[in-house]
Length: 243
Image (cartoon, rainbow, N blue to C red; front, side, top):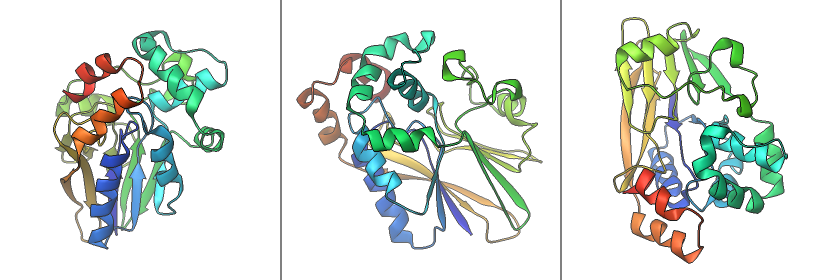
């Protein structure tokens, strides 16, 4: 069995389509895991969710931006540390398809699977056990740590799995220790370059094989949408995520 891992699409329809086209062309991927932050930062939140919810081979979990926007929609407030994106989140919240809102609310924070004795777990980022059910207002997701094996062990060593897949921190992480593999293929929709990263986990043999790939897409056309749609806080978003 082979799993594709995607994360942090962040409202980038063109990048998502490019990755899915490559995955579909392979013809050997049995399941795709999408590890949160499907919406916001980019302008295509509804289009991204149209695609994801329209496929039966994709399993999804929520990320911090998904949950922050759901909290706004529900009138439950907005996390204090996200105030620099409040205006943008509100713009997304006002435009999100109500059907997508209903489906997003039903998504879990963790997915798991066991294949040939290998346990795989997906989570957006580390959440301490006593915060696994906490509301986004209580900021359950752990503070982003530098991408080192030591930090991965500190956060994820107690997780009951052999391969821990996650996102949230946008650079690529691929650490293979004696007892666990820690994989973040990189942020699909907000890569600083002109490609969209994703990972493949090959579980067909005795040992899992991890590969990270990059799909080319028309980033210029994507960025032009921000001005055309008058996306709020676009200058800030460009500096933080795209350039």
